[in-house]
Amino acid sequence: MPRNRIAHGNCIEKLRALPNGAVDLVLTDPPYICRCRSRDGRTVANDDHSDWLRPAFAEIARVMRPGSFAISFYGWSAVEKFVLAWRSVGLVPVGHIVFRKHYASSTRFLRYEHEQAFLLAKGRPAQPAHALPDVIDWPRYTGNRRHPTEKPVEILRPLVETFSAPGDIVLDPFCGSGSTLEAARTCGRAFLGVELDGEHFRTASSRMGLLS
Image 1 (tube, rainbow, N blue to C red):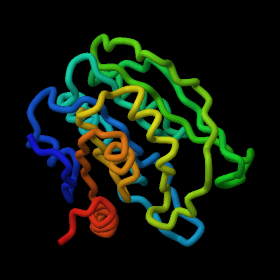
Image 2 (image 1 turned 180 degrees about the vertical axis):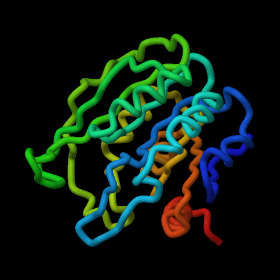
Image 3 (image 1 turned 135 degrees about the horizontal axis):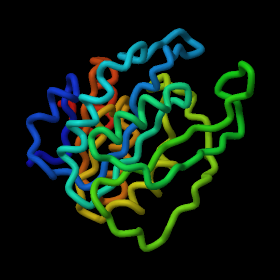
Image 4 (image 1 turned 45 degrees about the horizontal axis):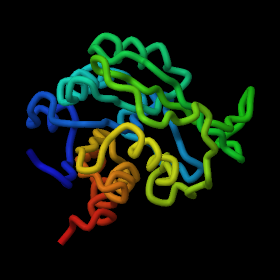
């Protein structure tokens, strides 16, 4: 079983190399299916269609051990697609987290001042010893320097600490610039990442010290 590695490629294909039940926690920020374009014009691979959604989460569910959690950010405008995909592969929503920002990511009919994620269960995991609040303050703007939707490590560490144990394997199949992987490592967990985009794969690999 590999540990502390990042694979470059499509996560549907790459996860097939992992055995059933090999991963203790999934924490991921997949494309939101919203045709995202950052202020400087960058886009996100596969953000313009949902063909990948169910096949990817089918593999994700397979490699999760029974009684474990997945935490997935998602795009509110495609929420029905995400929920249908998760339920169809046996991942049951058991919680919802709102991350409250102090700034707007963009403005249309409303000011977009939050991010959101679902807590998903495979089987019947035990309740955590200390429950997190379901509204969490977003500590800072990353500047999206490494990735157009870069998440701050500070919001990810409490999720890793609450829903996994030291030594566990944390998987991010859409790892982007590697924020989840850094959070896992600083919490004493092993990490596995997959990234489709070559530039982001190199960024995450360099960040995690995996480039020679």
